[in-house]
Image (cartoon, rainbow, N blue to C red; front, side):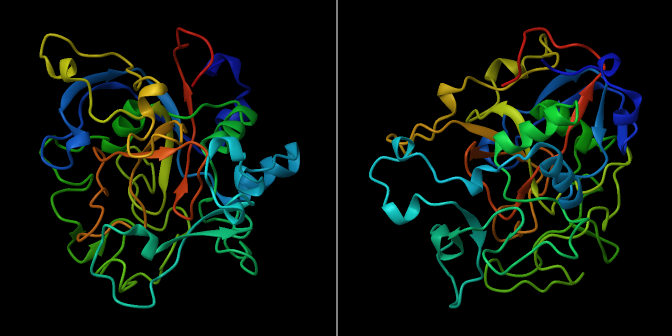
Length: 330
């Protein structure tokens, strides 16, 4: 069941969470990618949200307490992937690997994404890598199930897409491109951990980070939340939809605490033989660049299979002040 404030000990609620007051806001965008449309008014109730993405240190405490084994550490079920090569059915995860040769065709993501055996949250870039010294970086290589397991252990939930976007926008103006204004870089100050340069060929690393950065390395929004844009994509608990509901844009009807679409409708139509549902990711990551994946905006959204983990996806949790109607999440 979804957790509520009254059901959770105060000790958990005070662990670096921020109260989001709730309200009505303009969700989505008609100016960018088609899946962000139509822009429409939405109401969300008050809730509390983790100030930062869940860190390696926090996730390690969860694993130590529960013995949780992440999806990346378990071989995929061959039934889920018909015709898959045997060498792909091993514990592995997706890792960004900088291409050796200049890339001009940005449609072929295999030029920089690789499934690497034994890459997981402890070994983010594969065997031989570690999170030593990166305790305050966001945890990565977590599937949706891993994020849900952590949230339940902490007495929390994953946010809906509407909750996440409302919290990210804070008090930004509807006509702003970014949370902080109209420019990606403000007065020479970089406001989020995104790719600077020509993706994927050259990252200028102006702040020294070529991958994830410690949480809170960039300015918080007006609610006090950090890394809502850039650093890592974040899981929500809404099933993916190709667009927001068309009826949502009608001025007569403002959805209250909306949820995403149906699980079956979230399957990737480009992969009809693989029936793995997809959830909505929000926030963009350190791999988003002006020439590729301009999704470092609150309205941006991305579909991702629930069983797939990567080097640029993490999560944060919420606690709702109003009990949800309906039963278990998901």
